Amino acid sequence: MTDNLRTQTDIRPGTYLVDPDRSAVSFTATHVFGLKPVDGTMTVRSGTVMVAGEPHRSTVSAELDAGSFTTDDERRNKDVRGRRFLDAANHPTIGFRSTRIAFGDDGPQIIGVLSVRGGSAEVTLAVSPRA
Image (cartoon, rainbow, N blue to C red; front, side, top):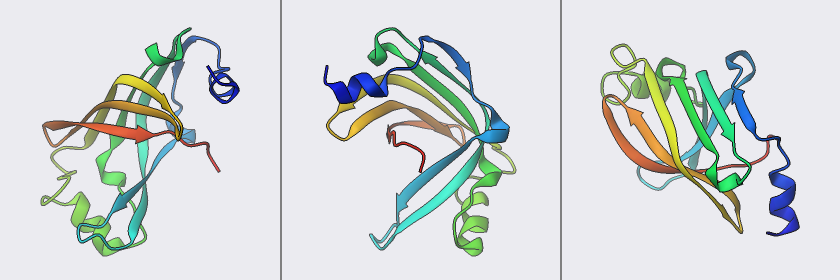
């Protein structure tokens, strides 16, 4: 284990609840045509982080508010929240649960299942410190 990884895992083992009033998910998505990246946020309804003594055994789960999808373009926001994509009116919650944690040269990654509109897919989330 490198010193860098040891520093990143100096959190006491235990189960932590995410405070929705002080939390948000930030994301960067690539535009469908490969144009500039799109940055955005979504609010967290609830979440749990279980920090294990062995960091790779830790788990993360969260529920996001689909209607809170926000970027720098209100027209895009309305379109993404609408029936064509998230359908937030009928599917108000987006779920995530981790299946494993990986530690690489670029920092920790959380691999898990993202559930949107009744479907699910595996995704890899890069963990970065809050700026």
